[in-house]
Length: 433
Image (tube, rainbow, N blue to C red; front, side):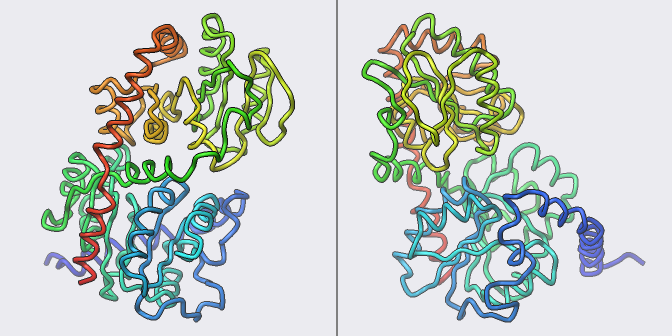
């Protein structure tokens, strides 16, 4: 006699929870070992301020989850519009990382409260849901935590996936466990996806097509707001650049990429001796290693947090958070990292919002549709190594009209793709009724 649907589901979740228990010593050891993961660990285990029985909500709370700084930043205009539309609702935004917490507390001060998202142990999830008592849960991008979603569904709490996306690697992994994730996805009242590709993928995983919509990417709205709010935050003058010096900004870089950019910079100095390189590592705790790599190649190296007078070719390591986005405004050349190494690439939208042509590598799965648009419209250039990067950027430096035209095309793409926040809020309003 075959097992029925309910028993099959219990078996699947039972196996998942068994694996979670077996892995728990390693999970906790990893969190304790990483300094940036230690803050908020008590909350992640279900102990909110006031203890596990503390009540954070009164049934009129909207809970928005944004895992880290990138998702938290994208969620800012969404939370602001929700607060304007529902001023009587309390809005709680959860993150996993410390940088996410800093982003929320800095950009949504007075509009939302922060908490750390619980680890996906059933008891931790239940404790936090009992305390927060959300009327609605909104998950930004794609965080599929089975126990959290199952417990929310059991309580009848609507859950919306906003700005949803499924990167190729993640999708392939989920697809191997399609039967399980089809049940996980059943907890979503609505899946608001970024692109047509994301819509197709989540339906293929088992989401109900009637509950799936394409709303676009919230980050187009976020970066448009950035250009209005960020002027004056950091400039060439703040970095000590003199008149006539130009900036080459390499943003959100990873190991190996810095060496590639440094080799490219060496070649660019032949055609633009007044060019100054700013390296902004994705993780600022790597600043020492980035400085060492630049010194190894014979460059004078400065750090943003340790300014000193300098002249001539040099490398400035941006070892601060929150300044890169506005620095793109003064850049002549831009490279966006995470794209020469296989981590999926980081968003080109921030430099594009300032009207900058964007150079990126071949690993762009996390923004594949945007990258395709950039290439089709001549707003971006794709390179494979230091040689191709130097050739592309040399051509741009020698043809400033082309450089400017590509920047205008990038800005136009940002303008044309705005509106995801408004579309998402309209769908949320239907769910809230």
